[in-house]
Amino acid sequence: MEATAVLSDTETALYNRQGYLALKSLCPPEEVELIRATLMGLFESRTGYEEGAQYDFVGRDDPSKPARFPSMHDPRHYAPELVKTAYFQRALALARQLLGENAALYGEHALLKPGLAGPETPWHQDEAFRSPDFEYKELSIWLALQPVTAENGCMQFIPGSNKYEVLEHRSPGGDKALHPLECCADFPRELAVPAPLEAGDCTVHHMRTLHYTAPNTSPTPRLAYILIFNTPPVYKPGRREFPWLEGRWTDSQTRRKLWHKRGGLAIDVMRRLPSARLTSPRWVAWAAIRAVNKVWKSKPPAPAQQASIKETV
Image (cartoon, rainbow, N blue to C red; front, top):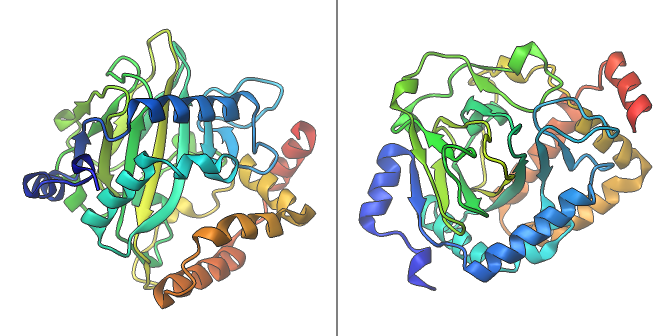
């Protein structure tokens, strides 16, 4: 294992104290170009849109118009070479150093923030998006695929907010058809620390660390690739509530549900099987409980959303 994939004791202590780190050159230059070209190709072809994998992060999906903030979940399902890189192995080693040897990939996220008009990503904690019925150990690794600055929307963090509980969140404008959540609790925004990066650098942050990215006011798009790692969450139903998750339903979820009904569910299962940890009872238990919860708690889209999808898909 290369030295760049291993944190020093000082770096580990800093991560545990402030809830994030900025790391140099975790991704080799040739892989930066590979990952960037692969993701740009997926965005340009709108790969996965009909399956709900690609969507507008800040607005309602309208296939007749360019997305204000193109986003994509789990691009490896369409480009498996993304997780066959030295970068992925370094990221996995980093996650296992911070979370333990049982850490594994939970998901990916690609974000293409357009130049001049790319909107902000509100302050939030990642755990606010998760089911409140589980206890988590999770982190995210945010890879810069070109230089990122305050001008084009680098990550900003509140040091020490990893020690907070999950704060109150809400859907922007009260619209639960949108993907983002924003933290609406009081916290010291004046302590925000920007983390500018060069291409191939990354940040790693704890699931409770408050973070934000500003609008992209530069003339060029800003592309980022996020890997999310966790250990098997522990089921603890009823210990807390996240009311901001109740009733959330996006256009991409509607497309995904329709695709599953048309036979996509079998494809989805086959895509996920290679990474399934079927020999680990903890992973199997989490996967089973999560699947049951999704079926039990998922709500069909509102009639207005159904009409919107029929008009646009």
